[in-house]
Each structure stands twice: as C-alpha cells, then as structure tokens.
Image 1 (cartoon, rainbow, N blue to C red):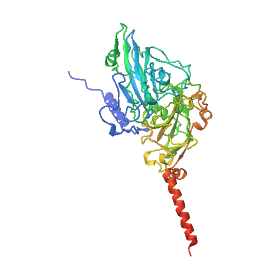
Image 2 (image 1 turned 180 degrees about the horizontal axis):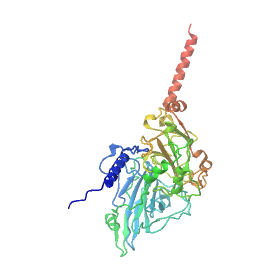
Image 3 (image 1 turned 90 degrees about the horizontal axis):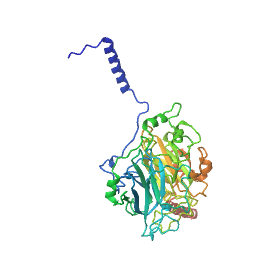
Image 4 (image 1 turned 180 degrees about the vertical axis):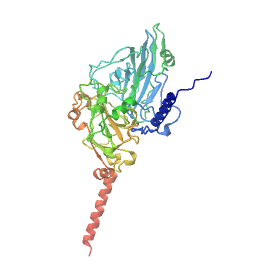
Length: 490
C-alpha cells in the first residue's frame, strides 16, 4: 500500500521537533552526576560472607558486603523474607553471639521498623546463659535461646525508643505480612569480638516451623515452606531517597553550592522522613520523634550533619565520648550498669540518594585522652594530614572522593549512633525532643567542628605518639648536653 505524502507543515514540524530534541541532547547538564565511583576490585561474581536459605539476603555492612541504607561498618546485617502459612508457628533457634549487641527487627515495605527484640531481653534456654546481661559470663559455652515470630503487629510509636529497659524480658517479635504476604526480619550483630568472625563465633539462627496440623519442619525444609527465596517487595524509598527527589532538594532555588552544609556545621537529630527533607528545605515543625530512616533499628537514635570541601579540605571534630561496655577484646564479663549507653559510633557516608557507608569508628576504636575527649579529622585520602593517625592520638575518617556519590563531589555526610542509652544519662540523642535543641541537650557529647587546610591542621594538632614523645625527650636531652658542652668550652 502506498503511503500518502506528508503535507509541508507536517514536515516542517517534524524537522523542528528533531532539531529541538537534538539541542536538548547536546545541552550541558547544569548539575551533572559526579558519582558514584565504584571500587572495581569488588566487581566480582557473588557476595562474600555467611548466609543460609533463611538469612539469604546479606550480609550487609561496609564493602565488600552489600552496602546500602547507611550500615555501620562494625556491624553485620542479614535479612529474611518469608511468608508464614495460616495457622503455623515460627521460632528461631540460635546462640547468643560473641558481640556487643544482637537484635531482631521486623519491617514494613518502606523499610520502617515495626518491632525490635534485643539480645539482653531474651530469656536463654534452661541451664544456659544470656551473655548480654549485666555481670554475665560473656564466654559461657552454653548460650542458646529460642524466640517466637508471630504474624501481624504494628509499630507502637507511643513507646520510648532507644533506651535501655532495665529488668525487661521478651521472646516474641511480631512481623506483619506486607501487602498481605511478605514478612521481613533483619538480624543485626554489632561489633563481633575479635577473632570470632562476622557471625560472632556462632552459627546463624535456624527457623523451626510448626504447621497447623502439628508437623514440625526445620532448616532447609522450613525455608521451602516459608518461601524464603522470594524477592524483596519494597517501596522505591525504602533504601534511600529517590534520586529525582534528592536532586530537587539539592538544587533548590536560592541555595548556595554548598547546600545543605552550613558553616559552622549544623547537627540534626533524626525524627521522621518529613524532618529529614526539612534539612534541605529549611522547614521546621513538630516532627514525630521516631527512627524513620532507611531500615533503622528502634534501639538506636541518630544525629547527622553535612559538610562540604568548598569550605576547606579538612574538617575537624572535637567532642566527648560517652561510657560504653568493652567487648571487642573478648572481655569476660558484660557491664551494662556503669555505662551511659550500649554502643556509640560515628560514620562517614555518601548522600541520601546513595546510602552507602565509607567507614565508621566505634566507641572502642576512637582514640581519646584521659578525659574521654577526642579529635577526628575528616578529609579525602589525598588530603590526610600527617598527624591524623591513631598512633599520634588523632582519629581520621575519609571523605569519599565522589562526595555524595551522586551530584556533589565535595559533599560529606556523617552520622552518630547512640544505642540503648541509660535513662539517667541526660546527654544522649534520645533526650532530644525537637529540632534545634541538639546542642543544648547533648552538650560536649555533640562534637563541634571547624574547617582548615592540611598544613594548618598539622601545625595545630601535632603528633603525640609514645615514639614521638620519646624522641622529643631524647632530642631535648641531647640539645641540653650540647649547650652545656658549648658553654664550658675554653
């Protein structure tokens, strides 16, 4: 069939459309993507680390593991996706890890926590020890437990979250069926003892499923019935802010090219998602005080700030470290009474659309003075001051070379965790009730920062390592001896 010849106006319109499209393609993007930059050494088939048919998603942490939703590099996370048959009962049988903290947390399809069950709450099996409790033998051989998973439940936002609940016990966690089908639980192991591996020296917990007819299936058989190999069903903003929305917030009219960083830097306690966007928009209000980030745990509370290298290549933080238990070295007895909280860490991260972590320092890694004060320098690897090393008494964390990992190569993003604060400790993130009172509540436990050059940092923060101090003392003795000899010369 012969097609009709197009009329002249149609040809002109088509030509204009093609020309217009070409100009759009060739036009320079005013905010081009500067990242992410991936480590090609990790570009290999498969993900390293232990997992099972039930704990099939993970491990999550820093590289080389799965890295999303701002994990802590001293923590390992596993996810389970499953569907309990009607009338069934599910339990998880495991052993307490040789670690600072372990927990189970259930989530909805936006990555928001529903319920959490921390290790110190769990009653061990008869004749066994819960090493997470105060005064317990952390190296006990008999350390088994069983927890029950029930279908349903919803988050109780009226309860106080993030505080240590002295004397409380529990062994049940509720996991709702998102969209009527999928249940999600995340297992966390914080700071495994050195030499114990990422699972804390024990196997991953095993599912035990009792069906409605009384039949009991375990392990692989339970995985099959629970359909634990199903794909994760989540909303687009479960793991991070959608890229298009992040770009809108980053490029708001009238904002400087350092946005959302300020000088001096501003710290923001984490409330809900609306408040998180308020960091960019400037909106303030009565936000809900709950951990509504990207797969957070309700036992943590978070506070964050943004920095920008356009203010200076080295950013220096000075603050006070709260008291926490010592566990990394395999300490034999757990101490949860003479502390301010269960865990503390500070992390360098990418931005809100690329929620990967670069590196964290936890409370046992941070070098402090006798009064528990610390100095942490943030910079790119190429800008690292020669005195910013642990042996000099100065901590260092890297600012990623690709900045926010998306649009701003100069942006830095840091976050502090406070876990299970003691109710009588007045300076925890948990005590902050509204945006703007962060500094007043936390006092010296909220670090203060300043920008400077590498050369100025090296002059202001000199090395105080034992070797350096010994060398200085020896040189002083040598100089004194030489001066006395010179003075006595005939």
